Amino acid sequence: MLRTLNQRFRSFHAANKGISAVEFALIAPLMVLIYFACIELSLMMMLDRKVTSSAAALGDLVARAATVDDDNLEDIIEATRMILEPNPVEDARLRVSSLYDDDGTIRVAWSDARGFEEYEEDSVMVVPDDLVPEDGSVIYAEVEYDYNSKLGYFFTTSKKLRDEFYLRPRRVSHVARIRDN
Image (cartoon, rainbow, N blue to C red):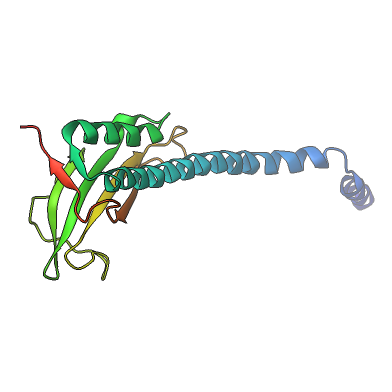
């Protein structure tokens, strides 16, 4: 009896048929999981780059102008939103503001937003040191977008993607905002 049991144990130990199938069955779910995680992460990173590009474009287009009226600003915002396509552009939140130096205090000259609240004129802003030139201004552009996973497995909650840019006006010291009232 012990001899038969010993022979069976040796034959079981020596058998190697199906080892590859067992290894594959153990590794395949993990590999599929890693594959879909890479896809989801790349989609989120691609959208994050688009948020960065749109914030840069928003600030740059406003900083190139000497004055901005309602029609110009609407065109700039639409052009900025188009960068985010094929994602739903109406989900983007954008704000562009002109900040100026008031004897060392940085204040808001004007602000316009879609999906955000506008900053109040003359409200005090905190910006990095030495960013706004003395008696000068900068254009402050912000873009925010909530990433909602298309797969919905790895990122089950919304991730807020956000970027901001400070740009100095190109042609004038202060970009004027003309409102059509």
